[in-house]
Each structure stands twice: as C-alpha cells, then as structure tokens.
Length: 226
Image (cartoon, rainbow, N blue to C red; front, top):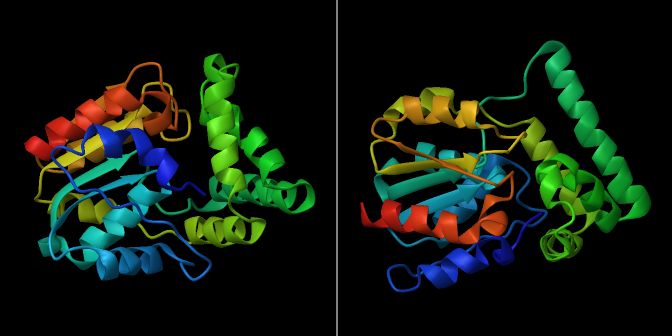
C-alpha cells in the first residue's frame, strides 16, 4: 500500500551514488512471485535491490529467480516465514481480514489509522506529520488493492532455505521498536545470510524509512559502497 513516498528521503539522499527506481503494485500483482517478475521485467540487467516490509519478501523472490542479476540486497522490517499453521496462522488471518473489513466498510483512511496502532511505536502516534504522511500514502490506494496484497501475504512462500544461498552484500534492517517485524527475527535472518550486516534503528517501529529516514539512508549508503 506504499508508494514512492516511502523511499523519498533515501532516493534524494543517495542520488550522488545511485539512480533509484521505485516499484508500485497493481491489481495484477496478486502474488509475491508476480511482484518479483515485475521487478525483473523493469530492472536493468544488474542492480542493487532494497525492499521494505512486503517489498522485502518480494525482494527475496527476485533473488530466488535471478541471483546473478542482484548485486546487493537490502531487506527491511520484513520476514521470511510462511503463514504459520494452526492457531497462530488463523489468528494472523483473522487480523488481516478485520482490517480488510474496515477498509471496505469505512475506507482506507480508517483502516490505516487503525493499522498504525502497532505499525509505529505508541510514542510516535502524536507525531501528526508522520501519521498524516503514512495515512495519506495508504489512502491513495483502494480497498481492492489492499485485498489483493493481503491475499498475497497470506499465501507467501517460505524464504528461509534461500537465505544461506545469498552471496551478495546484504543489509538486514529493522526498527528497534518494530513489534511486527522485531529485531530478534532480523537477527535470525542476518545470521542465516553469509556476511550480512544487521542494523537496528533506535526510536523506530515498522515504517523505518519514514520514521528515521536519515539513519536508514546512512545504512543504505554503507551497504551500497561496501
């Protein structure tokens, strides 16, 4: 549900060393595999790849398909496991369906306002500029697109076995206070990727590129110049 705004600061901050392109997903991108295929169709022959949240999962699928084309890989505030079996998976699906019901019944802004509780830390919820930037970005999308993306996430593939095969310079980043994609999960991801660098951003939750843009840009600069 994000657009170029989620990377706006980093694109500008890294313009001296990187020509950046940002992907946006449509209704036709109804799986993480379809998202990965779209990246490969539009990207240069070789490229550095960064993905945030669902985009991190799509980035793993890009690497699975064409490792020889990816020169560097950065994944942020993301995960690698498929939908859990049993009660845990059922609980995740119920949560996603509840947000979908809200999006269709009350609109994307209402859904986004609810989703922010947990997406960013409680101490950032009174940051009106940050909250409005995120909610407005989401509100540019439709409930139908939200449905497609939630279905894609519920059907997400298992990327855990891919991690040891990643051989390019890798950055694994999350917010120190991200409860959705917590530091412990990213420690496990970084430990599984040979030579990966782990960055935990203080004072940040799930929307790290917007919550702490300068810190994320600095980590990306070091990754791109490695």
